[in-house]
Each structure stands twice: as structure tokens, then as C-alpha cells.
Image (spheres, rainbow, N blue to C red):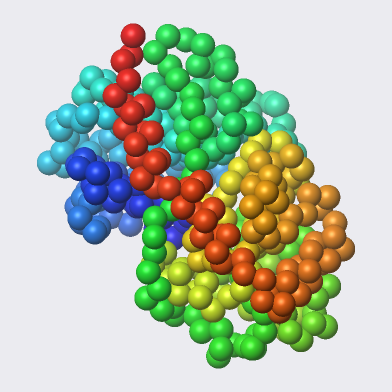
Length: 387
């Protein structure tokens, strides 16, 4: 559970518990030998259900695995002590778009309402980026997407700009779409297995990128940025995470003989605050071909840690407005490495001049991205009349 989505869902469940509810998390797991296993995470029961592997495999195998996943989870659930449990509400998170069948089954069996948290709009973003045409694969994914939306009574989207996409869906009786801001609960610094002071970039102003490194992030410009700043002995880059592009990124760094960067595998979520305590600036990257709006979970974690951000994102993204309005970093929307380099150096200069970003970053976290508010909105959505 090292992704920002997993951290968000953990925080959401714990806040639900704090507010007096009795949440249970259901998680697909390909590592189980038995159909299910039950554990407790900070007071929240976590039911792991045996399902096909969907991580770190080819796209075709991943698609097949994700298509089969909800049915395998249902089969595993029915073999568990909770197979006939009824629920007061069903909440699930997208991506993935494939959880509609299990959400619908749980909702129907319990006669309850459901709430879908949508954090990216797939397959539309894949079409925007040229990864997918509008042929048969697209129509298949659209069918899955529509089925998922049909299983929801309320859909919470990240930004106001994404509301229009759900106008037709929300026009039917009993359905409601609303803005549900991302959230992140307080985290303690318990240390980190990564030690920057023992690395080749020790003593520098550190830019950190922590999270998924895949096609959607548009990592190429970051590789170029590292190269353009190779002669700045006061600047270092730290990349931590997993994803489809990790090996390519590692290869590029090695080919270009870049000594101002280190790359580590993903770490446990509880180590993230300890990682950020060793850094100065967080990096956010989204491929510029995105047309939908996305506020990555890593942005929230940077804000919580008091780190200003250097963002390379698609033009018009609502994240640009937040960063600029709240003065918590610099934003590049023209996908120019020269622009990004200038903004990076500007941030380094601002930090050297003791500009206090931390106070503004923390304020953004408390006012815009509260877990408490998110839970209240979701619970309200589950309570609404379906008339």
C-alpha cells in the first residue's frame, strides 16, 4: 500500500472510524494462498481478497487481470466470514474503473447507497495522450466505465472543471455528482530507510519526486531537467517510487552519466514524512496532453510536509490556480524544459532567501484538503434519499 491512493483510502477509513462509523476495507491481493485474510490497521479491519495480479505486468495481462478482479474478489468474499454481511453504504475509488461489479453486488445485497470517488477519468485521458484510439479497446473501456458509473448513486470528482463530464449521468433521478476535494490526514515523522546525507546529493537543495513513474506523469521532461541542472552543485534530485517507466528512467540517468540524482524503489507510506523531512522542494508532473483535471495525492503530501512544489502540468489544470493563488510553488504549463529550469532555480533562490513556504503549504492542507470534511461529504452522499 505505497501509492498515494492507498494512503488516502487508509486515512479515509481511519477518519470514518474516528467519526463513529464502522468501516471495513476490502483489498484485492494476488499474494494470498487462501481466498481471504483479515488484519487490523490502526483499528480498521482490512479484508484482503484473493484476486489476479494487476501490478508490474504487461498491459494486456493487466487488463485481463483487472477485468477478472471484481469477480474474483466476490468469490473470495463469499468464502469469508463476511460473505453475507450487510452494509450501510459502499464507497469505492477509481482508478481502477473495474470495481463496478463488486460495488453493485454489495449495494444490491445490502439495499444501500453507494459513493464513487473518481480521481481520474479513464479512458478519456488515455485518448488525450495518444495512448488509445477510439477503436475496439476504447469502446471496451467505455463500456466498463459506464457500468461503474451506473453502480454509483453519488460520484465525487476532484475539481469543479470535471463536473461537466458527469452532467448526463447526473441528470437521471437518484444520482448526484459533487466536488470532493482530495484529502490527507496528519502524518508523523518516524524516520526513513533512505538517508539523503549518506548519498551523492548530500548537502544540496533537494528536489524530491515520490510516487508512480508511468506514462500519465510525463517523466521525460524531469529527466531533461536533471540533465540541464547537472552543473549546479547546490541542487540534487531524489526519485522514489515504482511504475512502468522506472527502468527507462534509471537507464536514462545512467546513459547521461548524471551524478546529481539518485533513484530508489518505493518505500512504505509511513516513511514518506521522514523522506520529505530531508528534502526542500516537491515535484509534481503530469503529461501535458491531459485535458481532464487532476490534483495528485503527492501534491497534498508535499503541502502537509511544508514543501513548496515545482509542477509541470497540463495548461488549464485547476492545480495551477491553487499553486499560484496560494503562493506554494512554481508552475510550468508550456512543457518547456527551459521554463521548468528557470522556475526550479527561482524556487532554490527563494528558499536560500529564507522565504517561508511552510506556513502557506500547511494552510493549504488544513483549509482545502481536510479528511474530516471529505468523510462528512461522503457520509452525507450515502444518506441522501434515492427518490
